[in-house]
Figure 1: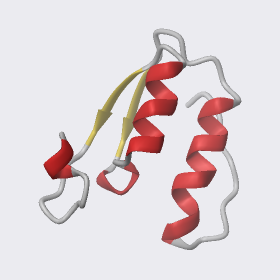
Figure 2 (figure 1 turned 135 degrees about the horizontal axis):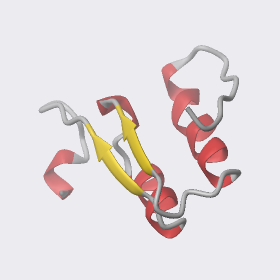
Figure 3 (figure 1 turned 90 degrees about the horizontal axis):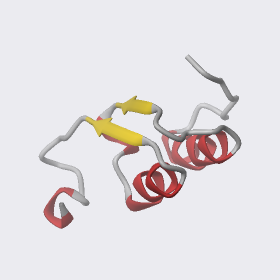
Length: 68
């Protein structure tokens, strides 16, 4: 674990809290694993722009799966 952050407990607030956390840490060459809830363009762009590598679970009901 490289960092932690508070969010208000709502699923809708988890992705913005994660992007804030990721943008505040040096992700160069870091491997980030996340569950399917965090699979969205904002999250993957934040990790990629910072030089990180991501592994995110997939669920068939995720609206972004058809974009991958």
